[in-house]
Length: 288
DNA sequence: AACCCGTACAACCGCCTGCTT
DNA sequence: CAAGCAGGCGGTTGTACGGGT
Image (cartoon, rainbow, N blue to C red; front, side, top):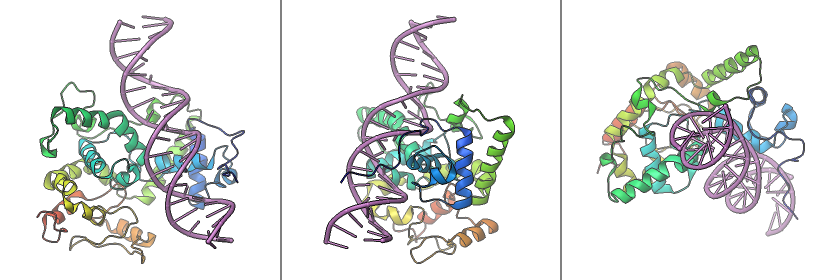
């Protein structure tokens, strides 16, 4: 018995998604929620494979997605997580708020694998805080280092296929913005502070020690995946309401959001809190 | 201006896993 | 318990773009 194809391939659109398709997908998921990907295209009126819809949503349209400009801190984290986890892109992505496995995988394949190879050849035993500063002429210089406020460059800027008239484009943009805001009220807060916080985080906390030591087993508890049960928090660290499996309930998230509380999952993680926590005595024994 | 080539990244494909029936 | 299904994952491909010649 052969595998049932995920969808009939005939008559389906392929390739780059148009803004109109994005809008249809966002509207549908906003109204009906995620899931039932196989049936979604038909119900939503999209001429796309269900898998394609899922990928588009998860990697690009989902609220809280950060696009482009992977910072040096994030790169270092990816490199170390890759050293630890291998090509487990989804696991690595789970530890980088707002990043997707596809983006990390692409970035690794195009940039980091070469960089790591170079570093290995140049200095096989170099530690993280001794990493070569990038050459000033390097084309891989992170824009976030050059500009006080990182400019997100996305593929969309290069998109030449947008066929929507301006009013509809505005509609799509505002829809996406409101959708993101409704799911992550703190996005404006984080966009300006994220790079600072992550820098402090990596400065305060030698992640190399974590990843290269036996304590790596603590990774899951100290770098919780979204929706994953967490068993170590700072003492001043309060979780929103969560269910028995440790998953945060939506009403709890709402309350958190409204109260502007420090923990902001999915793209708005408070690195300072975590850093100070990890330096504290409660910190999973990481600074031993 | 035209062509070539390398890079970046969006999207596709097939397999695997876990859940449901 | 087995079969079917949905969703997830990682590898790979396709394509747009920019720079060099």
